[in-house]
Image (cartoon, rainbow, N blue to C red; front, side):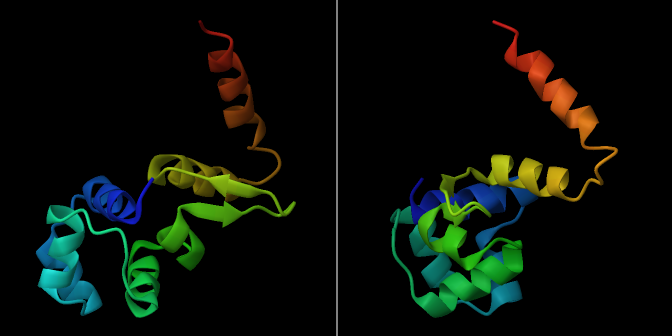
Length: 110
Protein backbone atom coordinates (compact mmCIF):
# COMPACT_ATOMS: atom_id res chain seq x y z
CA UNK A 1 0.00 0.00 0.00
CA UNK A 2 1.44 3.37 -1.01
CA UNK A 3 1.59 6.47 1.21
CA UNK A 4 -1.36 8.21 -0.45
CA UNK A 5 -3.42 5.01 -0.16
CA UNK A 6 -2.71 4.77 3.58
CA UNK A 7 -3.67 8.43 3.96
CA UNK A 8 -6.91 8.01 1.99
CA UNK A 9 -7.77 4.81 3.84
CA UNK A 10 -7.32 6.42 7.26
CA UNK A 11 -9.49 9.38 6.26
CA UNK A 12 -12.21 7.12 4.84
CA UNK A 13 -12.14 4.80 7.87
CA UNK A 14 -12.72 7.79 10.16
CA UNK A 15 -15.11 9.67 7.87
CA UNK A 16 -12.82 12.69 7.56
CA UNK A 17 -12.22 15.20 4.81
CA UNK A 18 -8.93 16.69 3.66
CA UNK A 19 -10.04 20.04 5.10
CA UNK A 20 -10.70 18.50 8.54
CA UNK A 21 -7.31 16.77 8.63
CA UNK A 22 -5.64 19.99 7.49
CA UNK A 23 -7.25 22.03 10.26
CA UNK A 24 -6.43 19.43 12.91
CA UNK A 25 -2.79 18.86 11.90
CA UNK A 26 -1.78 22.26 10.58
CA UNK A 27 -0.62 20.67 7.32
CA UNK A 28 -1.67 22.88 4.39
CA UNK A 29 -4.82 21.77 2.58
CA UNK A 30 -2.99 21.86 -0.76
CA UNK A 31 -0.34 19.45 0.53
CA UNK A 32 -2.90 16.93 1.78
CA UNK A 33 -5.04 17.38 -1.32
CA UNK A 34 -2.04 16.54 -3.52
CA UNK A 35 -1.76 13.15 -1.80
CA UNK A 36 -5.31 12.37 -2.86
CA UNK A 37 -5.66 14.06 -6.26
CA UNK A 38 -2.13 13.58 -7.59
CA UNK A 39 -1.59 10.27 -5.82
CA UNK A 40 1.58 11.74 -4.35
CA UNK A 41 3.61 9.01 -2.71
CA UNK A 42 6.04 11.08 -0.66
CA UNK A 43 5.94 13.69 2.09
CA UNK A 44 8.20 15.30 4.64
CA UNK A 45 9.11 13.53 7.88
CA UNK A 46 7.42 16.41 9.71
CA UNK A 47 4.13 15.60 7.98
CA UNK A 48 4.56 11.87 8.61
CA UNK A 49 4.92 12.62 12.33
CA UNK A 50 1.89 14.94 12.39
CA UNK A 51 -0.30 12.48 10.50
CA UNK A 52 0.84 9.48 12.56
CA UNK A 53 0.05 11.31 15.79
CA UNK A 54 -3.29 12.53 14.49
CA UNK A 55 -4.44 9.13 13.22
CA UNK A 56 -2.93 7.18 16.13
CA UNK A 57 -0.62 5.02 14.03
CA UNK A 58 3.14 4.55 14.21
CA UNK A 59 5.42 6.81 12.22
CA UNK A 60 6.92 3.75 10.57
CA UNK A 61 3.52 2.52 9.43
CA UNK A 62 2.50 5.97 8.17
CA UNK A 63 5.76 6.29 6.20
CA UNK A 64 6.22 2.72 4.94
CA UNK A 65 3.08 0.69 5.62
CA UNK A 66 5.16 -1.72 7.70
CA UNK A 67 5.56 -2.26 11.40
CA UNK A 68 8.07 -4.15 13.48
CA UNK A 69 6.49 -6.85 15.61
CA UNK A 70 7.87 -7.85 18.99
CA UNK A 71 9.72 -10.77 17.46
CA UNK A 72 11.51 -8.43 15.04
CA UNK A 73 9.48 -9.59 12.06
CA UNK A 74 8.27 -6.86 9.67
CA UNK A 75 4.52 -6.81 9.09
CA UNK A 76 2.54 -4.98 6.41
CA UNK A 77 -0.93 -4.19 7.71
CA UNK A 78 -3.87 -2.42 6.15
CA UNK A 79 -5.56 0.19 8.36
CA UNK A 80 -8.42 -2.23 9.07
CA UNK A 81 -6.09 -5.09 10.06
CA UNK A 82 -4.13 -2.66 12.23
CA UNK A 83 -7.34 -1.53 13.94
CA UNK A 84 -8.35 -5.14 14.65
CA UNK A 85 -4.87 -5.98 15.93
CA UNK A 86 -4.89 -2.92 18.21
CA UNK A 87 -8.24 -3.99 19.67
CA UNK A 88 -7.04 -7.55 20.25
CA UNK A 89 -3.84 -6.43 21.97
CA UNK A 90 -5.91 -4.45 24.48
CA UNK A 91 -7.71 -7.61 25.67
CA UNK A 92 -6.64 -9.40 28.83
CA UNK A 93 -5.57 -13.05 28.68
CA UNK A 94 -9.00 -14.31 29.70
CA UNK A 95 -10.83 -12.48 26.91
CA UNK A 96 -8.27 -13.16 24.19
CA UNK A 97 -9.75 -16.66 23.75
CA UNK A 98 -12.97 -15.21 22.30
CA UNK A 99 -11.52 -13.60 19.13
CA UNK A 100 -9.00 -16.44 18.80
CA UNK A 101 -11.81 -19.03 18.72
CA UNK A 102 -13.82 -16.89 16.30
CA UNK A 103 -10.89 -16.42 13.93
CA UNK A 104 -10.08 -20.12 14.05
CA UNK A 105 -13.66 -20.99 13.13
CA UNK A 106 -13.94 -18.58 10.21
CA UNK A 107 -10.60 -19.75 8.77
CA UNK A 108 -12.23 -23.16 8.33
CA UNK A 109 -15.02 -21.73 6.13
CA UNK A 110 -14.31 -22.23 2.46
